[in-house]
Length: 320
Image 1 (cartoon, rainbow, N blue to C red):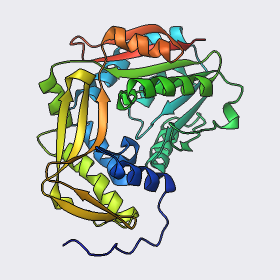
Image 2 (image 1 turned 90 degrees about the vertical axis):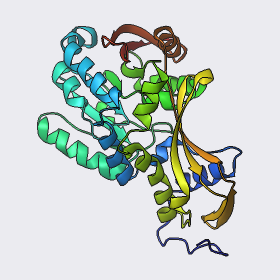
Image 3 (image 1 turned 30 degrees about the vertical axis):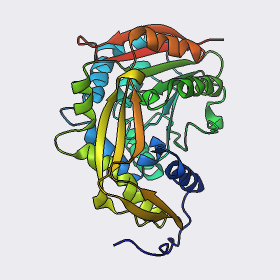
């Protein structure tokens, strides 16, 4: 039942950036929210479950690339660099890289603090001689790296095609920001998803078990919990759409009926069939990926892909 007045807000103050982004996104036409807010503890757990689904090819394909080509990395990267991972999550791919290049330190960055701490502890146990220095934060914002790696050459690690969550202009801005953060002489190992058959892409973002739907809908649960919302969860369904003109998969939450709800004391209306655009995942051709990196001030050094051409892993060096 919808309330005629805003619900009582939670006692704990919500993250002000979360509050700002959600209120701004729900006030837009069309409505859209940034994908970083998927990743509370439950969202992070659901995403890890997504990576094991049969339809979701990116994780296993990228792991396969790392397993097959890890032996080439020391000659290209060198040893004793500080590895800085952007959006570390559970860091499932990271051990393959760390074993190959014998780094001097590992700095995982992720917005989900609890999830990051548990994965960092597991990694530190697996590599007892390696300094593991987690940083909780949004790598799209201002970040400072630990002083312990100030004098070390750096390798950025950006797996999972997370760069695809941004429109190309924003992706270029991020690549330039990573270039500034990592500094002169740095390198970047990045995953990028390839353009492919739309049916395969849609299946990867709308799996038969409904895990991706639960991941998408969990954003509404978080809004209700942290922002005192009364969003009716049963009124929304998950949609995954291929936008051919923009070469991207879009995830939406679609209202199944006309409804009104409150978030952080503000009232919102949605018509039946109206959506909240929660994520885009841009896909790139080989030349597109290289152009994106060069625009972001990174010079591609080597690229690896799987036999089907589903996914690319690219090593780049800091450019001008």
